[in-house]
Length: 201
Image 1 (spheres, one colour):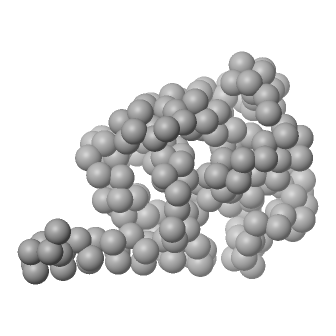
Image 2: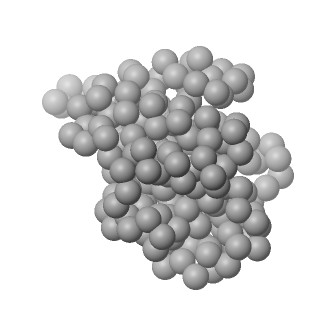
């Protein structure tokens, strides 16, 4: 696998200045979140953050071809939704061109836009880092940043609620993985409330 500095050189060629800076910001945020939640491999989180958008700006037809050739549980909704292609393509490119064979890293790249049920800690970190990176300026981003450092499960639920609402408001199709992710984190919240109500520790 390439080093962080080598990956930065590759990104500098493949991405616009704005997208390159976003990738640096996500990497920095991912490392910060990793350290906050005592994730054992903060450097892995950093490199994954660098890689998450590596195929964001390649031609759309190339992205689609990579999506169709992916073996990472791609759904018909994802195939039909071009904004989702870069994540799936990115995982394929990282594995085939950059010799990234760490399944956790590849899944974190692949699912950083849609999420999924049962996400690993690294997947959660990259999903949230992308949403709260320093360049983000959407409404309520400050609240999202605060949530991300209070409880990663609660932050994921809020992030997915935000994502689902955004997709619905745009009149777009909801990816199955996103629905399953939302239900997964809702179930975690429900279990926590049940424990509090019954006094079970």
